[in-house]
Image (cartoon, rainbow, N blue to C red; front, side, top):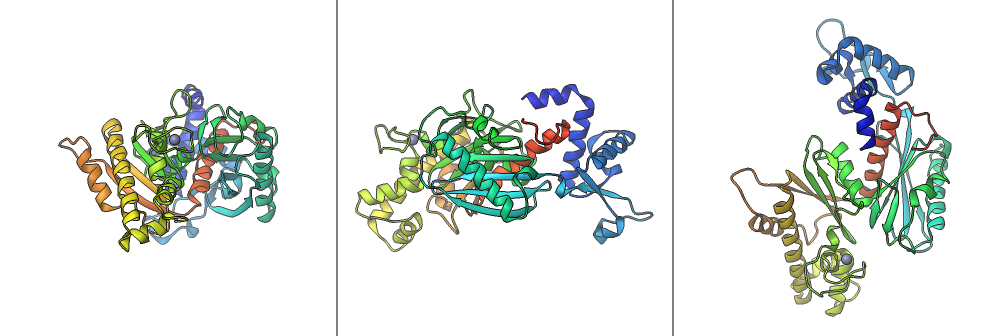
Length: 403
Ligand SMILES: [Zn+2]
């Protein structure tokens, strides 16, 4: 990555990044502990933190404000923490019917949420770009801020999105293919705009704030209307040569099988995604069933629900087992948009994954099922937005200058 190379070539920038990261990870930390954790000399830490203090990125905590257990014997040390007001970040998720904007401060603390309805599912690029910026403006107004206060907007979109180029190969949110959406957004916003596949953002959130902290190789599989995946390899988000990596929902499970929303046949999503389950159930006579309805019908012994869900579980378990065999990850997080329980994420499915994966005499891949609400997408966008805004602050890029 460009940022990584630049940072490696500039020791001062590298040091600023390391110090900020140490402070973010600790929450509050004394200079001496920053030096110990980063291996940077105490004198350099003092110089770098003085710089970060003068730029307003961090602030001092007076010893008496710290929790009692944080104190040590002798003279209490002054601790440092990130200054929340230093930056305002907007995380945006574009769904079929709504644009969700989550505003957070530099520490990641929530400032407020705003939802703006969408008039149509597939929009023209200019219409979608206008709607995203209008929703962000409205979110700011609702929570006492201005769009000009925002340091970075990160937009998550379902589909084949090349985040590094800000290019959308295909998304159900757009009425055409091959759209340079990030430049269209940047032309309308007074701050840098980052665009990324929505499942990649959920993976970034896990890496920065969740189960993936400190884990070099892990996968996040999102289960919702569709089935997505974010791949973290060697600590980096793996995007693939064209930015389309991780389209797990469109891996093929049946030759010439059910029609998928991508236009091809036999995709995993067409059997196990929310819309696939509904479609399969409707074809077999169970109309207008939500995934939760299907789960309850199965529990009540309905033969159609039993058949549709058992077919979906078999496909899902095989694909997960193939992921274990291909990637050998330390961890797979199943991020499931459901209140409690999901028919695809049962102990039987996890046991089947274990049986179908190649095994060695070492601890197996951990599979962690997490039930989330629909905020997980916007939260993912804010996590990555914070990382990118922090990187710009480390570079001392003036506010308002495009990325
Ligand atoms: Zn497909």
